[in-house]
Amino acid sequence: MNRIVFILIPVLVLLFSGCAKVDRDVDNFYPKVRTTNVTVLPNGDVRVTGEIISEGTTPLSFAGFCMDTLPNPRMLSNQVSVDSLYGNTFTATYKALEKSYTYYFRAWAANQKGYAIGGDVSVSNVTMDSTFIPCTLPIDTLTLVTPSSAKNYKYREISNIEQLGFEWRIDLYAGTSSIEIVFGRRPTSGVYRIVHQNEEPKGFAASIMIDNIIQDYNGDIYVREIDANTIEVAICKIEWHDLYERSLRTKFRASYQ
Amino acid sequence: MNQRLIILLLLAVSLGHRCSAIDVGLKFSQLRPRGDIGETYDRGISYELLLAADHWDDKWRATIGLGYTKLNPLLDTFFIYGVKGEKTILPGYNTYEALPMKYLYIEEHFRLFKIKNFSFYAGAGLMLGHTTVKQSYAIEEMIISKDGSIDYMIVGLRGGLQAAYRVAKRFIVTADVRHNALVDQEWTFSFTNRTIGLGILYRFNTKNDEDNE
Image 1 (cartoon, rainbow over the protein chains, first blue to last red):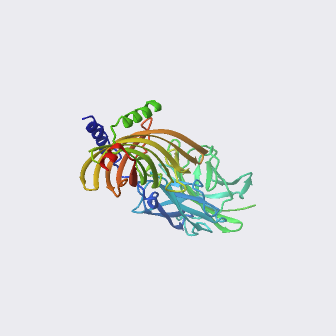
Image 2: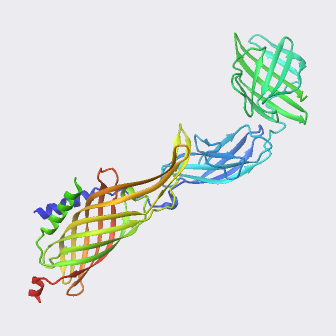
Image 3: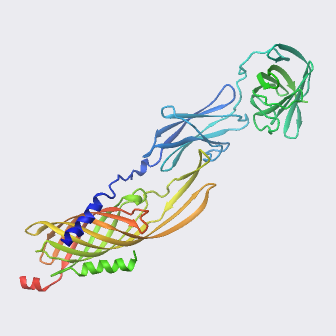
């Protein structure tokens, strides 16, 4: 009897232990991912696309890209994660890249076991399409819009582009209004996101101040290089709120000193 | 449970068995890791030296044995990662050294049937052993390269089926499949494995044998 118990108990324990399937498919532990292509968009942004060839043996947890100006960028270099897949592909958009560099991108993906990274794809000469400004405006004109009116002004003075330390500044005067635009880099062709005056504009970012009043101005500034010394600046719409909802639009040309 | 106590228990159970013949044997098995080690270590060969209180003509047989195996990792490098914030992936790696396992076991076999020189057994037993997991790992920005070595006392149960064939008066060859359910002493990590093995037993002269002769 004792012997039967001696055998029976282990057999029962064994029947209920270690029955889960063990994943030993090492070739498929990790996702397989490919960097498919990289495209410069008309606004100068760069869209990179990756493809999940296989998820691996466990569900996909993360996917994204990394980018650098050197080949085979490391995973943490300018890493972005994507929120969703479109079928087996995923995309991300890199903004504020400079024309003078070659950029290398790699797609990566991670499942519960680990991660894998694809080969690199490069892009050079990143610049905004010269025709890409999403509005048509008269040159050297400022339009100020309030809830009750929209007034047009001709600029009476447009300063040269002046470099002050790591900032490039333009001052404009029209009617009784003054506008100060500060770029965080030498303004070349591209789209510059407007940041708050308290925030240092870096890369493709700029701050703006109207009538010397600090506000939350929302919008983009489009810059197109006319020649080595002149740029054309277009603002399709900048909005801010004081007592009223206000906005402005303008297009002008400015030159370096 | 105290390690010495378990060893004494195993020996007592084994030596307490009524035996009329003692077999000394060697067994070579292919060990297939399962459990927590299943996705880290590759299959390997296990070697066992055993003593069997053999009742060739009886339904019961007790065995005590010592085993050793060394399992190589499935991959040179496992590409692990950490997560910073919500979705910043920090790449890392984990490399393992070969996993040595030493174990002692006792088993009781019950003969299911016997046809001339061929016997077929079902068996179950207890195991006790030791292993050391050595690894080196790092995750960027999170863990600077670390070498780790953890000793585990492993305990568990084993069970399986065995076919035995008496090829000569003193030699028996065996083939068996076995499942070894093993955990560390804290029951947090599983070293469970399965084996498919071939063995040979040499039967020493005993009074019964001499009588039979």
